[in-house]
Each structure stands twice: as structure tokens, then as C-alpha cells.
Image: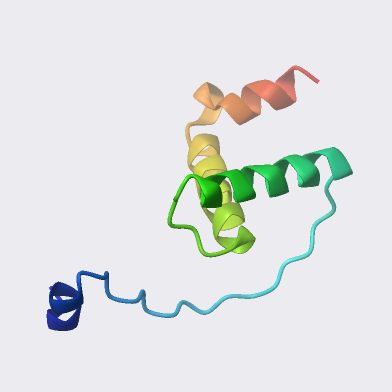
Length: 81
């Protein structure tokens, strides 16, 4: 435990992780839904810094799901197309 965090009751800042900007194209409907969900999470008091954090966590979940192979919900969705 960080002594300053214990004294102030605030979590220690996360160490900086090198990041790169990535560009992708998404439908406006998906981007609107993403933005609404981000703002709802902020209103609900979820500790989320910015939209990039939400996108990164969502991508981690998606990649973890793909690692499940044929049991993956995403692979099943692609196979339905």
C-alpha cells in the first residue's frame, strides 16, 4: 500500500502505460451508443477517465472472448452473417 493513498483515502495513480493512437471506422449508430454509454457510466459514478479507457476495456473483453475459440460469442456472431 502506498502511504499517501492510505493517508488521503485515494487510490495511488496508475503508472503510465505507453499508448498509440489507433484509427477505426464505426457506424454513427455504434458511436452514438458508445458515447451515451460512456456518459451514463460517468453519471453512475463509475471510475472511468475517458472514452479511450472504455474502448480499451471493451477490446480486452472482446479479445478474451475470441480466445475461447468456437465457444466465442463473437465468432458465433460472425458465423451468423
